[in-house]
Image (cartoon, rainbow over all chains, first blue to last red; front, side, top):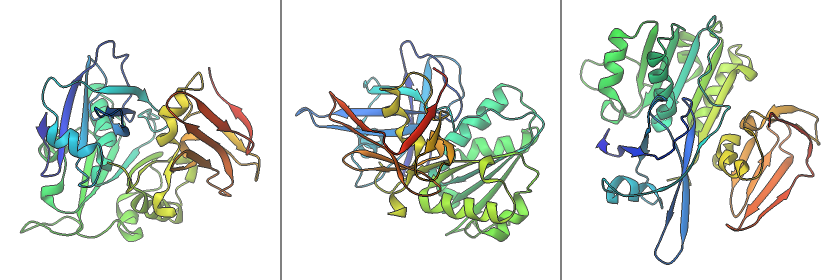
Length: 229
Length: 85
């Protein structure tokens, strides 16, 4: 396991008999206390498919039941109960003739990162643009890898917006993802959008996209809520 | 209530315990308004149970409660469900 930001860690799990997964799928992690109390949460798989290793990127929610354990208490060698891979709707399955827009808010970038990694592993040429909204540069998950992909990724564009705090000399966006920002980065000829983040974020973005002429059926959404963690 | 809204992806693990085949791409038709959507796109609210609502009219299409041993489902809001087993 390794830290991604102050609040976010990635855990690499070795799963016996892992059947493989598709980018965008998640797993349900169940923890059982000594007294039998169980808590279960869903976490997106961050890694591309292939091999027995499954990487989960987990944001610590301070009053959560599962994420503080996974990010603070878990150690190498611990065992977890998993269900999955789960999901077949929010998965990377691009039309090779159309572009893809990925929009992530906060840790909503995790399944989108799996898609970016899968796209690279497949040598997929489908034009892809990631719009990633984070509070600050320090809160950007996978920062170094995204910076590298940005410079070398064939047909991959990455646009950041930092909503609370920007580093000195920042020339990118520095506000919430609103309709005007989307009109600049989300051309309607993009065939498919994957949108993931907290519920208020994704609903505001989806509404703006539809207002700009994107077909609702071409916007795939994965929400996560405030009660998670 | 809107802040607590999730989507069918959040119910996928639970539904996989009941149904054969991938449920988030299964298409359900709402008995209230007749709209058809993939289960991945319906609205989901998690509480003591899991409630799935039509994203168009917000009618309840499915209620699922599990106590860890048994699963109880109310499907009266679902007119049809089409899936690949």
